[in-house]
Image (tube, rainbow, N blue to C red; front, side):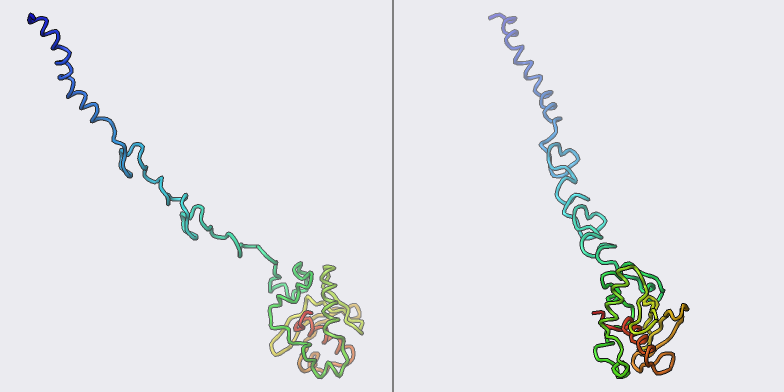
Length: 219
């Protein structure tokens, strides 16, 4: 075999040997299969994609990144939910409040209540006044009609039950209509006094109505 023929056979093999370093550099330049959060992770686990990413994980209770967790204000106790309660300022203001309908007047009175009528005071028994149940029914009927006035049983008086205010020491303040004039009075539900005078006759009926509105059981 002559030299030229031998060299022609060696040329491809030599070329391959010469290209090996270049191929190794190309292979070394390819990205690795990826790691856990590295800057060249490729198709591996990317930073932030796991459980607990801000705003996507299970969340917390009221945290700034609670995401899908329990959010503030959701569930029981949300503002405005449930029964509307008359503000304390509505009592004694002589105006009707929608929350008083359906018997709602009695449950939210802002002073101590519920004791009057459970054991009738001696003055009330002696005067033979209307029952607390009758007064309660009159107030509920008036509230259902969006009114603040009831007729005091056995009298020509009209009591504005929305003016009734409970005072310390079992006393009460109220306004009532008599002869076309609105008058104000203060009573003592324990001693049976109206403006310091023993209540008898129609004044006893008026005091019974005011005391029931202020301190009656509401049933």
